[in-house]
Image 1 (spheres, rainbow, N blue to C red):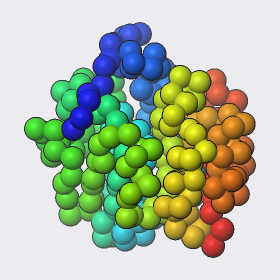
Image 2: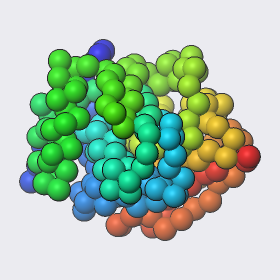
Image 3: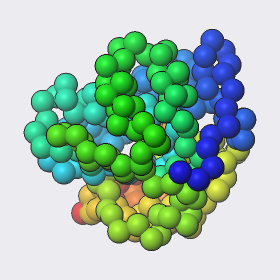
Image 4: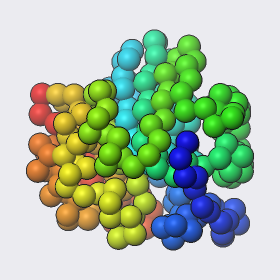
Length: 223
């Protein structure tokens, strides 16, 4: 699993990375942020289909995975969702469980997923989910990945505090591993991130952000 996350708990139980001095999810509502930015930003559930492949930079607490699988099930999808996540500093399952207690509406699904991740397992399969975590620095692991994503969740820590997750080389690797017509979404609207995505081949636009964030970024790869 490599190096593990270093965190502390603030503001009534929000996990904060001490390595990057940034919270793992919105202090306002982490699940609502996921729904607005990553699900809505990638036009989900409308694009769901059997074998739909989501890739993610920054697994964090696993909230994005759980929210996505919850939406998959609630909308009656058939077949299997594929979810690949790249994470340099994974949380322990115990810390993820603690983070999820703030969201009682996902308690059952959290338990189901985290039971599969016991003993720090990095891949598992359910009837409706194929999951893989690729540990290590995404700048090294993503260029060597053989997969292609239909949608990307770009969820590294803030570009100001974790710039290596938003550099042009990594965004180029994201573009190179995106299917024609595929998409990407992120909470940040930083100009250098938008330009890097454009240089990677995406058509990029700003949309209204979540909560106190005025804007977010969505991107679509031409067909």
